[in-house]
Length: 430
Image 1 (spheres, rainbow, N blue to C red):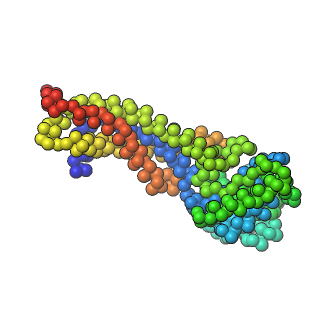
Image 2 (image 1 turned 90 degrees about the horizontal axis):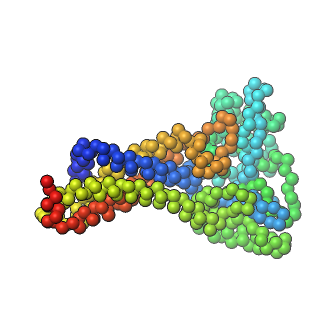
Image 3 (image 1 turned 60 degrees about the vertical axis):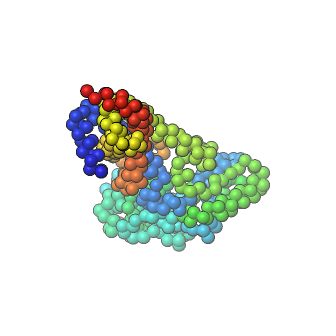
């Protein structure tokens, strides 16, 4: 059966080359645009290195009080969120700092992204250690100047990951002992992307001891089972109610832990922005509307092409119906034949989308989310991994897009053609 459809499609393409090419192009372009959007969203919410367990990753990153708004303070991180370790691993990640790394010549400096965090950071996220190990709890509590560095930095400074462990790197004129080397994280995973990871306790940071200020520079990441979300939310809400009473600030808030796909689906552009159910819903409406436009408008054009094609097949349909074929059977046949053409165009569209994402990666992601993903450097290049493009979810999405495009473009003209009287259809044969 499938072989027959391919033969019929091949015969159609040989007989109607221009129409076939136009139809395939008309399918490939919307599929390419749609798959770029879907891939972009998959990178934001799917499980990719080193955030391999986003289905168990909870994030809280926004706070507001009388005197400030922004990220969460260190005091809140340690007093409110660290006790949630009874549900899973909890890490506090400070907003990245730009350090200057001294290069091997002893004079040149390179600007790098330094991510201060705690020892549980490497329990929450699945970093692949190429050499060495994470800094320890004792390193963290003692404020030792130590670091885990990315493989790209290790190769630039020491030639290999193995050679880097135990050596020291000089950042902002301070020596840091290298405890481990990890596989580079992409800037497309902004929570975990950095060239160097250090304990935030080794920074000269003043901690506000008063309960008044809830805001600071920290984002909280929790790795816990899905069923613990309600319990964690209840604990944070309870502490927030107490803080509102103590501070006499009814508008104060601290984001409750949100599952990572909700947190990552919302664009945080202003200090007062935070992740809420309404914000997530709005984001889905915007992206969903964009996908509908990418599919419906081309479907209307393709529908016109199919209508013209069906007019030329009226006599064929009439003969089939005269010999007992039902409308539903013929409709399925037309949809299946059209699906072959749509899949060909869809495959080409998928290749086009991959080409655009790979070759234009430095501007495509910045176009969709300006400034969110990138730590700007003159030589910075977006690290795009194969798992971001060749996920089973991407292939499934591509097939579904083709199926939807096929049905929406073919079903109305095909059904209208099949409603034509048999006698009229037979008389169309020249």
